[in-house]
Length: 147
Image (cartoon, rainbow, N blue to C red; front, side, top):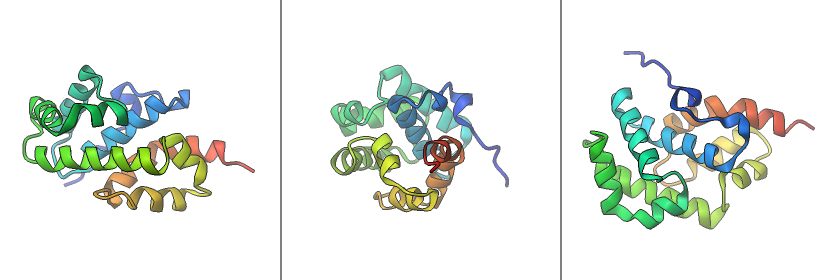
């Protein structure tokens, strides 16, 4: 069954602003949409994160596991709530420790392939999540990496 692809602008995310917060929102959305879950459920969960202001790695780490599970459950993201809460904490922690920001992660990547590899080096990020994230980030990445 072919899913309709979701794009950043449909979630009110403005990647062209080149703001770190917008990049992270799309990253968060990609993590939620990367699971084999209904798109409207992933979208509802994403909206709950925005409502709670959990749209930075710092906010996610500060919220902690119980709070993340609660927000996921409110978005009806119940089948994967525990594993996703854990993944969001792991990914946010690694992003902060290794790169600081997504902007820096992209800056350090010489190509889309390298960016893809760096993303998949995160625990719990596979080809599907990476594909979703790169779908909307590639045009921006390509513009900023022209020689």
